[in-house]
Structure formats: C-alpha cells, structure tokens
Length: 374
Image 1: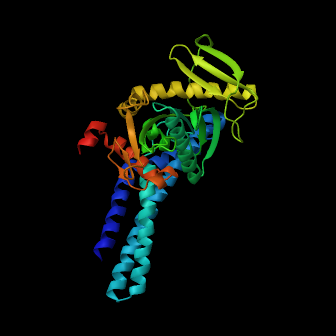
Image 2: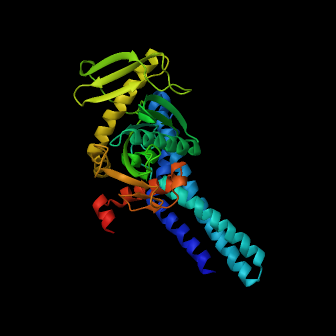
Image 3: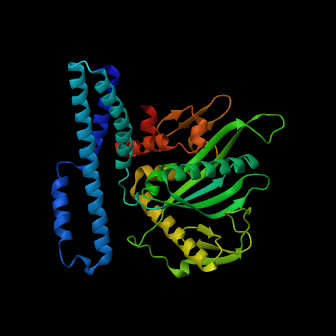
C-alpha cells in the first residue's frame, strides 16, 4: 500500500477511534436494548413529551451505531480490495478502492466533528448576535461582513436563517444584528464563535488607503426548547414598544412596532422587530430565556466561560480570531492556533475547519493558554 494511501487509512482509523470513544461502543448495544424495551412499554405515551425525547435519543443512538459500523466496514472492504488488486496486479481495482478511501476519509472527518456535538443544548437552534465595536464606520462595515459570512455558512448547512432585528450604521454596514438560525446542531456548531473578531485591511473608506483594524463581537445563545424550564419573574422585566429603525430592505421591517425587553437583575436587553407585535413579544421573550440559559451554561463550562469573558468589550486584547487581509492573507483562531490563508473562503462561509478545531479543544479539556503553548 502506497504511503499516501496508508496515511488516509490512518486518518480514518483515528476518526473511528474518536467515534468509538464518543459512542462508548462497548456499551452501545446494551443501551439500545434498554431503549427498545422502554419503547415497548404500553404506558410510554402517557407522557408525550417524555416519549418524544426517548424516541429522539433512541434514534440518535441508532444513527451513531450505524455510522460507526458503516465506516468501519467500508474501510476494511477497501483495504481488502487494495491488497487483492496488488496481489493480482489489477491497477483499476486498486485505483477505485483508493478513490473510495479518499471519499471515506472526508466522510469520517465530518462525522468525527459531528460526534463532538453532544452537549446539553448542542442540537438546538440558536440565536446569533453581532455588534460592531471599536472602529466606527470600519467596524460597522466589518459587522455586515461577518453577518454575511454566518448567513452563507448557515445556508451551506441547509439551515434556516431569520433576521430578528437590525440597526444600520450611520455611513455603512450595521451597528448590530440578531438572527435565529434553525437546524440540527446549529447551536453546537456556532457556540465556538462567541467572542471578538478582529479585522485588519486597507480601508475602503480611507482616501489615503491606510491599513485599519476593526473589531466586532459575536454572541451565541441556544434557543430554549420546551424541555428546558427557564423561569422569568414578570416583576424583573420591562417591556418597551417602539418604532423599528432598521435599514430597510427585504429582511428588515421599518414601519411596524418593535419590542424591547430589559431584564433588570442581569441587565440583559433583547429586541425583535417582526411585523406582528404579539410575535415580537414572543420572540423577544424566547431570546431572553435563551440568554439566561446561556448564563447558566457558562457557570458549568470553564471553556464556554472563558470564551464569553473574552467577548466583553469589542476591542484590543479580547479577540478570539484575527482576519488579516493586508499586508498578507490569513485567518487565525487565537484559542487553537488553527490558521488558513483562504480568507475569501472563510468570509464566504467556509468555517467548519475553524469551528472543528475549537470543538476538539473543548473535548481535550485544554485551556486557551495551554493550547497556545503547544
């Protein structure tokens, strides 16, 4: 077997090892037997919500087992084909098996990343907030570039994107925007994006063509579903109705009432500017509950806590990622040291590599300082 092919096989085996670890492959058949026994219980649907959760959990286990076994079987089948082809000097069989292994390596790498998304709220939809920081017009333009990047990424994933609110910049771009992104594992993927994002480029707004640095903060919160109870005391909130001041266009409502909810104990402020005031109130309340739930997650998770601490002020020293367009092309995540020179691809939504590196860091249990010291 050629060295290049052996390297591909080794990568697939590495992915299989991680899948086996996340699945706990030794106990998986017994856990599936337990699920099957509970599904046959005639009283299961006496509690519909519990039954639906059980069915979802069972299906997730079934899918995980099938994925692991399929990759394991396909890997061995193609190794056998290569060995057989080499014995019989059949270059066509060897070539077809090597091509199949290359495709399997991509599949297994993707499944390896998905296996890291097993947190309490990872499977949920998510709210994504973008706020321009230090840099004035430059940062407002940078905020609109980031908004486009995340929308492109979500569309490539097949997710649904809904603009919840938007505030236009005075000269260009946006001061802030809030989105709801719906799809399986939306929060799990995007949670690593919380923090300050730094851009270095030649400013299109500077007649002297000088290099400028801009900052924008991104915050991500899981959409709280019916399985998660969040209590909000009515006396702790203030609800204000006002006229939306968005920039207009097909996504932004500029004529109907918007709703702002302020949560006094935490200082959290959420807004929504859909066409229906009733819908606005419902969306804003869900967003508030998601923010409160995220605060609780932050307390439990040292890594997430670190990320959100770094998402304080959008300025120097707090960034999690740098996007350099001048004098060279580089996107670098400062938590993992993952970097790529494909700045155009990243800004067009090719984020899985950056996200995956952060997910892997979370599983390894390393701190940001430890990762940077490797």
